[in-house]
Length: 570
Image (tube, rainbow, N blue to C red):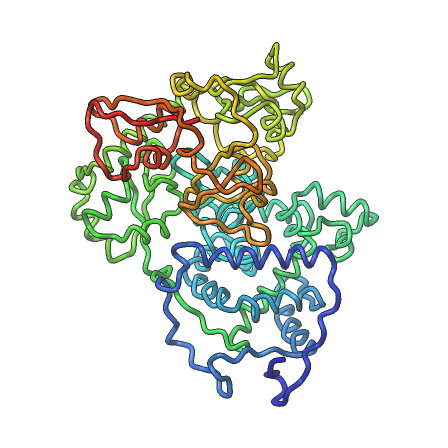
């Protein structure tokens, strides 16, 4: 039991009544988003400092956690309600989320308060441009906890958690190098437009919020089931479970952002605030290494300020996302040494240029993923079969039947091989999250020795890359999130870290087996002049991590012509 800040004596906090599945689902989702900040590089404590502008509140010890009675919460929210077009109310569901932000996850809330000084000026500028209430800036806290590279289990990305299809509708592009959903500026512009469009449909901001979370289809269905009433609380029982907790969480964030001092939460600020950042146009391909190694901008700062560049490469003028955001103190040095920066070429930079050239040639040579539409509105896509995939996995990914894939491709059997192209028709609702055509065909020489089908009891493992989630890995390998969780003991904690090895297939009772231990059979490649780990990995459809593991070499170790590398293992 905690002391009540409303009453100087010990008192019992009102018992939290039993909540609905919707509240519990939403509460769990919010807590998971807040917990994810712990594992994000730029959200670690060394990147934040306590604000010196907020003195301790009189009578509050530094570690004291105040809580208040229902009447106090209700009165404060009523004050906020008089200042906003939102119909802010207080109820048991709102109280539960206030506890999450003010008590259970108060350390994360302190960091979010600091991050508001980076993102809120941008949010307010764009929301105002589209006549969206400025309080809508709090939605990004509910969605992503102001983590610009947040990824949900469903595949939504960025500060505003856009799904691929919705993002595409509002001009957010996804490619091998650029993910506009991670771009704070472009994503905020898209979110402002999307929220205005939803309000124009429903004429109610809470219904617009519900549609933002679950889609207009679910909101329309809930309105019909409620007898046509266009009121969020009237249709509450008919909304998807997570959406039922969505608006209460939004109200709670409104409350805590205005009353954090009363809860003895001191903001901690990140290294750079909005006024410390400036933007430059980039005319040529540029990598983070070039900027870091010439004028000394820390790599972590470049990644934090430019999260849309997935591989640390700014492709240049051929792409629309050719801007660079830097700490303001580096703008002058960049402009003075711009020619030197573009000209600087280290070995890693040359490898990245080769990688960019290969990807651009693949993208230009590959057929468009959306080349025709069927009579029932489904979209034609081209799928490249990856190693370990079968028709069942592919059918589950595109939400169709195996028999349909067989019919669409006039297949004589249900066997498929890596690199084979398949035509599939997917729903045109953004439910299939593919940012581009699947990877180009894998060279067949990498699989010449793989004539014996892999036994079910053998394991396949995957090394986690930066930005991946359990859900994205499950989609990549055509398996379920639950199976990966079971195989790796992730139940109750779905967080993973870059470099971690996950078992993808095999018995859950087995110990994890690395790829180089699976079998002595392998394919070898003789290194040619000018080849790099990146080019060889790309040729054989494996990762650089695989090559370094199979050959016991470091990523930075130079290769020599004639050297033999293991490039595939059964």
